[in-house]
Image (tube, rainbow, N blue to C red):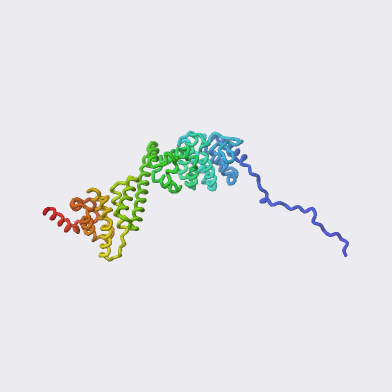
Length: 411
């Protein structure tokens, strides 16, 4: 055996890899550095942007802190809008005057930062969401500044900011109940519409999934079509009022059409259908002329058409008219409404090839069933205003009109 000593492993040092060393979070030092950039450049946002672009600050880690400094001039305490310890600057969004021209430079400045660091858009979302959900903690003029800023971010098409992540957080029950959300969204609408059309605003609301829920911004006591119209008329947003009234009108028509379609399909007793329609007309304040249009559309949509067989189509259409004549008669209560029904028949026969030759038969049937008066038919024949297929239909109806005129002379 050898008498030499065996080697040992003592004294060997294993180096720790750098990636295993977690650098401590230090948002305070980051915030102070950004504040110092503002102070060094006396709030000149062009110079501030250049200094930030050339800095080696860790924006990917402290994006939320950066936007806190942009909005409030310094750090805020976690989960609040209260100032935290550390340096502050007086050039923030909330230190501006509540005017477009004062806040627009900050929006353009942020836009410039986001072009170089697009990953910061998520941090902007986070901070805006937190502030908008804390509206009650801001002063009234600060809430207005936030509304102007928010409107300008979308007006300037700030890259990548999704409307739903900004608008949806507003719908906190306590904020809505206090009227803070309505006040904020009113300022937002007014500012946005200065440079954009109503169609642009509606498109924005669609993207935010709020187009059909505008009343959700209102406190419960004011949550009605009348309350909506009164509020935005007072605020000078008449175009928005007209849009909402039109939309509500379309919703009511759709609801009525849906209910009527169900009743027709189930062959509900005609007297019950009449009462249902009358109640809906009363509740929704629908114009008589729209009711007549819907009635005809629903009745014809319910017909089982048979392809190219003209005689079967004619029989099906006339059978439907006869079955529901009492319903039509209940709402065609004067010459104007009867004439509108004739126009509906004219347009449908013109636009649907399989019904083209049925026009005189349908009109004759409506006359026999006392839905259309003789004077209405003669007026349409002599002075009808709708040009669709008129010459063809006048010629087709001429024998019947001649018969009416001969009967009138005999009387």
